[in-house]
Length: 121
Image (cartoon, rainbow, N blue to C red; front, top):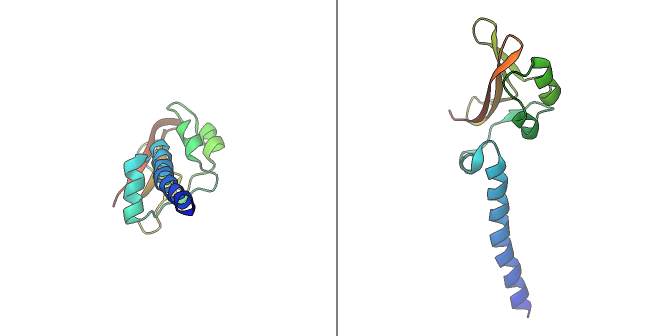
């Protein structure tokens, strides 16, 4: 009986754990392939204090900077990207290597583009 209980436990772990991991990664902005990639090469992502992927998913073109800041908090970096355009990042890589990129491009005070994925260097 003891053998059956142990075996059943390990069979459950071997099935449930990978299923839970794949399920989590497939809901991630980076997808299953991104999660697996970062598992192999390492993840060098630094996140803004108030940032969540759930809030990032709600950002849409046309939103104002103040609406985005209310959702995500202040960005870690702001880059000038041409006339009246800024590229604002809620993640970064201290070692300038692969990381989970979460950024918003603004034209004036309005969102024109949202960037979410892996930056591979």
